[in-house]
Image (cartoon, rainbow, N blue to C red):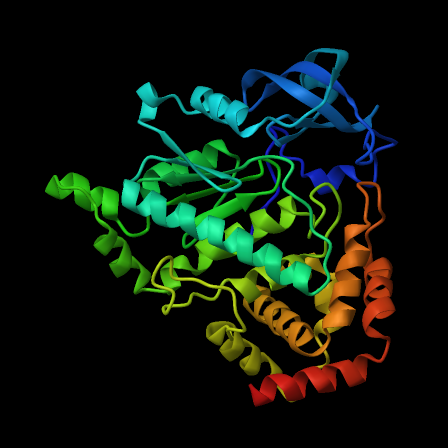
Length: 393
């Protein structure tokens, strides 16, 4: 599940796309000037360095900071704006760490920072749990990039250091989420925020609470007991896949992306692997058994017409409690089927989506056209092949 709401006016980035009339979006070979703004955000005044990526005289603006956060706001919240000849560049990892120290001062919450490949992990929990999570992120990133490049998908290096925040207790995590503008589901133990470009989660192993209550240090053995419960880490992996996908160009972060493919890829990779004792996960052709069970239950309905077209067109099916479970399972099944049986078509489809820009139109007819251009327009044949494949798994 990807969070998209962040600004005080509760407007999503996608909301701006149809109404923006001017776009500042620079190709890779162009360099934009650095802008400095002061604005009101979440009832506070902020100073940020970055660049405007979208502007509308009537609606507002979207501003991308040097740390990779996107602020979507009304013009009435802008206090001052200036620019100079310094080119826009994302923060280096060292600069990002200094920025995080200001956002998460040690004297206010005993925050710690560790680096794992392209990730910076900010944590208040045990070192053992944070180390497990950091190693999971680094392994996931390396194997994800290797897997999709091998299939022919063009991926890029992350432009911004990727930040993951691991909090010690659920209460503290939910407090942070509220400050982040999130209304979490009761069972939601982690989330990737598309606008802040950060993952937030809490230590579901309870190691920090156990450590404090027993006055002893958490150990690697505690983490291994946690990994013996694979359902605990599905969501953690799922949200990490979202972050990697949006930062390597698999899904253009500034542009419209059909929810089904973003979620389908995350669910495809979320399957824990208990044989991987280092972090409890490795990329492979793992069948997602809970999703398969749900999908078979859906497809067993004799009166069901092909649900694929509806899912591709309608993102709200993933947020509606009455349809969400079925469509998450369907997204996984279709992605798994394409990876196994139609790799070339899937790669072509991903390439089409990667060409989308922030001003790309996004409606049902365009989504169907994009899909048919890669997978063909014989929906009955596709559904029959898909149904038979799932039934044999």
